[in-house]
Image (cartoon, rainbow, N blue to C red; front, side, top):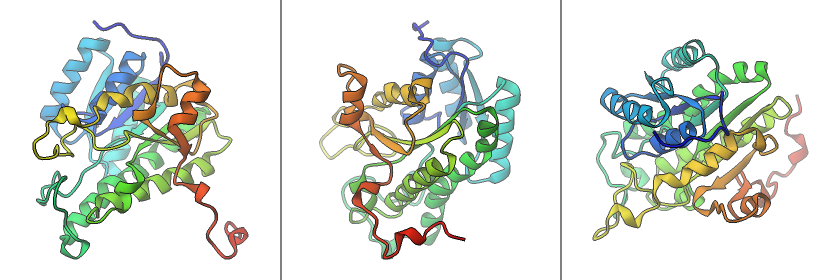
Length: 291
């Protein structure tokens, strides 16, 4: 069995989209388990769940994971998964909203590299499906866990988004806009949760990552891409008590440098979520929030 740390000992997490053998969700789950957490692994693919859960038990023991078939776009399925986690694992402290799709992985064709589809050629059902998983899903999950976390005075909501250039690049809809919406949602949640003991932050790999979402460039292999393991160390830190003051922020996992002191490390890889540093754009920004 792989040596485990106790950074997250006693903590219970949910990771959505956790089961793909080459996904970021599985890598994130691995990092959390190695840090001592127990994880409810949510996914819609039973075969992947069975395989990944068995692999994780080799690392963390028989009770380290709870595989749950759940659809993050279905409010009833989300509520059932959250309640199962709390009742069967004994609590809930961490939510990682990782589940994500693009038109190709949703079964609508297209490519995640090379030529891209203009928005005028997007099949409306593809748009609705991607937005439902990548944006509505994180809202439904966060909404379902927030009350429990606020009541206990502790919680970590972590949203996996993408690089800013991916959000607005040519041919990048609907994936890019869905992730931009997710990041904006995290920034709003962070403000709404201020002072509750619950934080909301963003974690992104930093570029094209070796998962089933991305096809390597022609002539290259997955080794040329960022590896999902870069997510493990920063997700453990964000989920820990040491990150209690880290709220409404984003971390680019690729730039997480363990050789640096924490303050310098965060300076290198961190920034505000949703780029408020660009400045207020409204004519009357002080009007917002008035009844």
